Length: 330
Image (cartoon, rainbow, N blue to C red; front, side, top):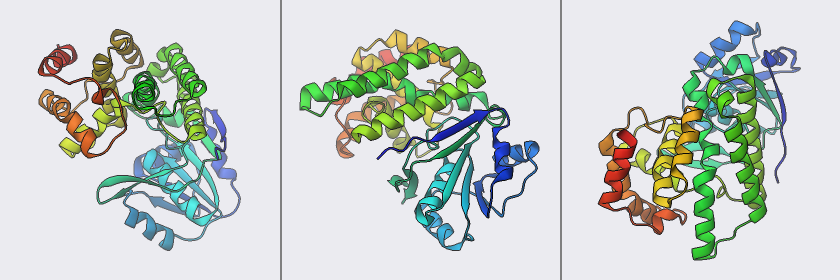
């Protein structure tokens, strides 16, 4: 059952950590912790620097880290997810302090772990206390904060695929939730300039849109309203290259390509991404790799038994690939 978090945002909001009672264990990384310490003179009972999200690592941490009254996740998605895992296993109070808004980990109930280099989701612990410190977040590279908007912009392609699956395969479709998702997309459109400039209003907009998205997805037990064929593109590129990229960049590329395949207001979607500052020309991904992704996308979807989408409906022809690549790189 969804539990709404108490979100405290503002300049210097993370100073609240100094007043926490009892023993506090912090899961962080070197860079976000050093940025925090420049603003706040505070040392917790125990500080752990997150190295990876392998399941074996997390299980070892749960056994070996000292007992605590409160666990704090301070940093990006891995720091927040490590704190969520520890709090889930130990049943203790948890506070999450994202230092970047590139992913929705500070608002979700699941923990993304790695098992044999593949992502697996475990746990069930909705964050109840989230501190959004504008000063901390604005110290992160702006392009990484902007990337967080991609998982809201993906509603545009995801709703198209969800409706298609409903009409073609009889998949359950909730019109009320679809409208809530569309409202989030419209709000993102209105806040685009602030998101691009990483203003306090833009930061709060992304966090609130994440919260709303997590809530309506939890209500129906599926991420269909925000995860469609654009995410399939992201997953396939990661599979093909075996390299790590900024998640939001790959999703933005997926939006660029799949709105063309869907014939779904492509120009509007690209204009929105431009105003948000999303990098759909993904740094480090070559034209050849994008071609390979499109050529193998249907095979990847079938092999991995992924959800139904436009990839199952519209053929990805050589002409489509050539035109899409010209549009992307021309």
